[in-house]
Image (cartoon, rainbow, N blue to C red; front, side, top):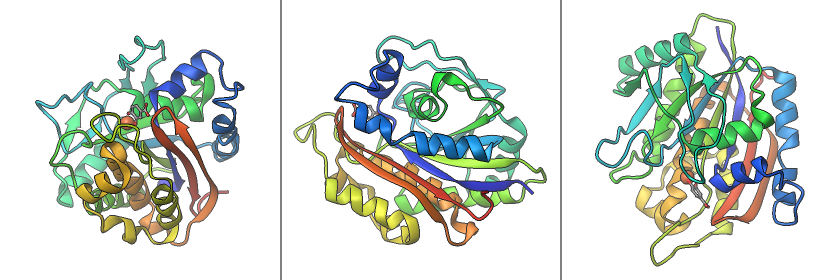
Length: 284
Ligand code: DHB
Ligand code: FE
């Protein structure tokens, strides 16, 4: 059976990718933010996962508002970056893991999640920035990726409780996969931020810290929020917490988790930036 080693949640602010490209990690604005990442990278290095399942939101690149799947999963041989933010970054494509993707697809349909399956899928900063943060220089090694996109751009969005249940179904699918692969799950985005409108620049540090506290052992407290309440508490784009919840849901069947890392830095661009690592008993 494939094994879940743990989950990582990180913000995916596009400016992070630009800062890494330009070698700005040691500059005063960025230093403290980037200092949080080496322990998580080291953990990945020692655990040697074979597959990363990445819950992210597509910000209008592959899925614009005219056709927006609530939940979509990639089943492609590879995924290319096409994020247009600061001009398309020269990021090598990541390799897909099609066998486990299809296993998850079948499991999800059997368990009442009627997802969109993408045999071609361009990816944006929601996926590429966390990959670059975890494997700097795009040295992914043998890690293969399964992108899972959750609609966080166009209302109606899946409820936080539904995103959590969706993640849980994916965790169950991984555990029922007849391979011996080691899998990590990642949730990207958040924490509080609002990029436009009257509350542009809104960040809610106490709420972000509350989320990071509760997601460890009491995620059900977070799944009680509606997306409208999340917008109030965390800003319009704070609904990206849904990806953190899907990641946590995937670990639901793993028993007590070990929190190996938690950090929060504010602001990076317009966002309260969080990083968290939760390990299962399958991790070394
Ligand atoms: C920012 C944050 C995001 O989550 C995103 O998708 C784009 C921009 C920001 O804070 O700049
Ligand atoms: Fe985002």
